[in-house]
Length: 280
Image 1: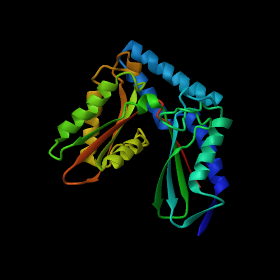
Image 2: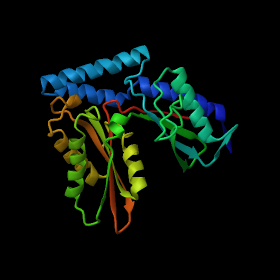
Image 3: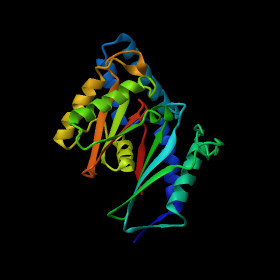
Image 4: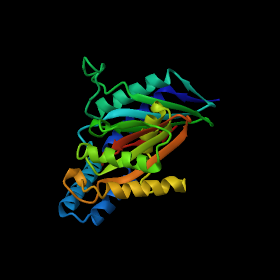
């Protein structure tokens, strides 16, 4: 059985916090650049060019792309033939996030209690989603989530009689209702099926899919394209000031569900839909 040390996890999370907040994923950079080239609205085009300049400057100067450096969401895939030594995985994740945010001079946004609102001054605890997989490694994905977009999350428990059109209308309606609040152009993550909490998790995971990949299921690939076209026809545009580019992509993650239900969750990522990963 392969051993992965506590300190290796801490170091990895420290580095991922800084990388994710200061460097936009290459696929998202390319999507924004392509949108800027194609945007017909002069105002929208100018905003997208400003967005490009911002993420390029942030990467060059090792500065946060956005002042809201988010709540740290960690997706961990632990091989069942690996063993963590020196401490608990959850403790290592939180220590790594605390070091990354404080030493990286990133904004500390987490309060220890939702009602009493006292800042933890470490941006912890992080949100940890753990999955056991085959192998002897540990894959860590750090996805900082700002709350301008997170607050636009919507859930609807559809009846199983709901049609594909009903689902598409709901997704488009969520983006329309959100307007400029999630700092468009947005990335649209959709969790469909499962239970209420699984649909929410799927919607968050959907934001991680590379911009240049389409759904492997042709049925959902076509559905994503239709929804994207409708969203970009809303006229919200970059930063809500009008234009064609309201969303950069739509990703739908379906899952088996109960015969009596059809949960659907929409989670929006802003134009700074950040994430970075490392495998130990």
